[in-house]
Length: 143
Image (cartoon, rainbow, N blue to C red):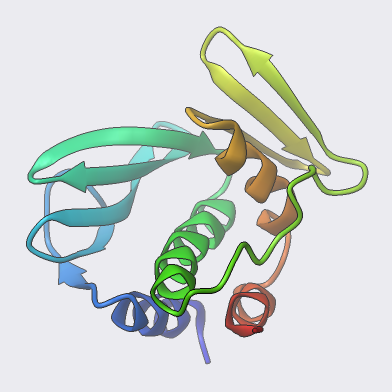
């Protein structure tokens, strides 16, 4: 399954449909919320909408790591609907760092970089930034 199909499949599991919006290159949502990715210069913003108000939850150094975080968002929604907990450890991945900065929580793992509003997103980023989406999908589906 290709990356776009994985994202679409997980969005549908979370009851989200593809959306067209000038706020994102790709997005999925429902009547109240939406999640997407927007290119900003040489970075990729994870965007979130609540009743039409768009905000940036974080930025990543590659489209792949942004898509990985988007897949995690969809997976977290689905896991919540199933009564399941987090799929990833509460600590940053081995060899990764998460530091508090004025602009947010900076995460670094190998060659990937991300900055996030929430520390939990930075922590998750360290686990998924370099993984193939199929591997993330398997982790999210595990009970």
